[in-house]
Image (cartoon, rainbow, N blue to C red):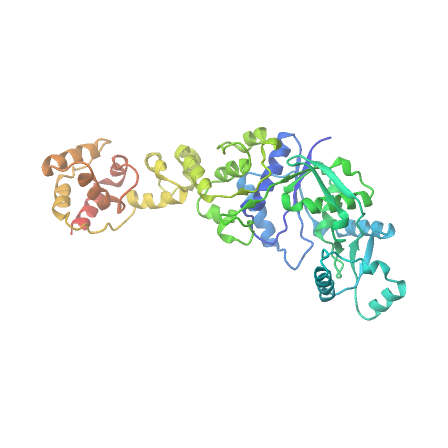
Length: 445
């Protein structure tokens, strides 16, 4: 049977590393097995989801290099969920409820005070037709719960081995709201069955959902043995807490705006939580390398510093042809080769372009006026060649007796405005004599 996987985000926020990771892992597994990758939007909650976020998710996935073989929205499949719900009602597995949230909370509080787990008491199973008719006549609309079986349901997890859920320890889940809209727990099962999904790869926080959904699969008459599961340990943030799509500072969108390359992100996420170190390689190579057995059962901490380190390594090796369309207009290969070894982020190239081709105002360097005026007097006329820096600094050394840091630091500050950066041997020919002379004069004033 051909592998079919799905990534099913709710369009209620921007992608962050915690939900980009399952998208990537599903894609890698599909491509390793020659299977199919489905992008499904779980958007039945119209009060929270937006088209803006759905579009943003597609854009972010495309930016990462992830493509999909099929895509659909749950909001377009409401008739399928209605038909499945009718089958469950007919089988006595979906029953109407009328308690308010306040009433449910009171029941939970009562059970907790008595030392019992806050499970739903199934009181509405005893509802008579007359009681239901009276409630609806009074303006109440039922929401619908799924009657879980009393068994322990288990499966072999591709990441964590034997797993099981004791369904008697779980409240009957609400599958349909009072307004008639179906909930994720239900719609996911219907979609997975209809889409012929074979493998469900998601986070450890879905373990209980998996037990419940396997019970729903049985109740709908589908073959649950056709589904395989892999639950990856969750990603945590720097504080150890779960990553949230509402943490804007760490969204894929913000990382992209900061100049982090998609390959740095995919290289990091593909092996985060495994026994293998991240390696910069194309997605196709990452797919060939994908292996469930490498994943730990412990939560993995997302460290943006490690992503930046990978990004830095990527920057240092990227060729000019690849990056040229994203450099400032007029930037040359000589410029790129001069600066790339100093970049953490591509966005930093703009600052170096201002150094060689723009206008910067260097600081006035206290106590160095005489030295800088001497350097200006010794600055050779153009044309310049690649030996200009060496020739010029040798002349300055001979005239002033300076060497090492006392020689080079004032020149760097005057010419670039910074204490550190690319080699001036490469930058000086790019900035030209007029620009260099103007900065030396300002720094000496």
